Length: 210
Image 1 (cartoon, one colour):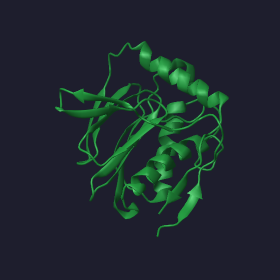
Image 2 (cartoon, one colour):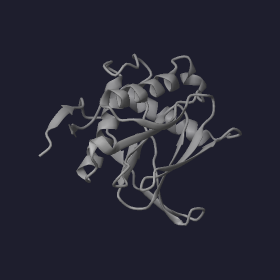
Image 3 (cartoon, one colour):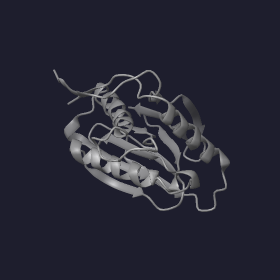
Image 4 (cartoon, helix red, strand yellow):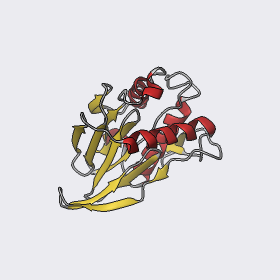
């Protein structure tokens, strides 16, 4: 039996939620799940996971042999360092451990995991001075390196929002840079999420199994 090796910090307010927005994607002819800030999804089915990223990052992690995979969508709080041991990194650590824990509960094996990471763009003027996108990007790379999970692909930083389509069973990813996007919804979602992080604590308690 695998033993738990680490627990994320916990508190009453900020929790990583399982995404519930499912729909049929006519472009790909398959079921899809939309991942919003602070959400994640893990599946053994042939679905596409979809998210739109600004300053946030998404980690797409899968067992490349079993085809079990998932995606999260998270941001570090505005204040604090990006290092994996910093106080603000508790939020990113929690988001990553929820995802990994769920994958392994479904049968994924740590030695077969691979990751693809996206986002961290400098797209919100209110967050640009604190380099939120840069800190999010560096955090996710540092975290995966510390956990020994190889990064098979990445598209991080720059100034553009991104729309990401991830197919967990095959590992295929399609990324569209939204160069001409004038979408207040994305900015508003990230501002609201940033406010929740600033005013809350990391929620839940997660044991990471190896």
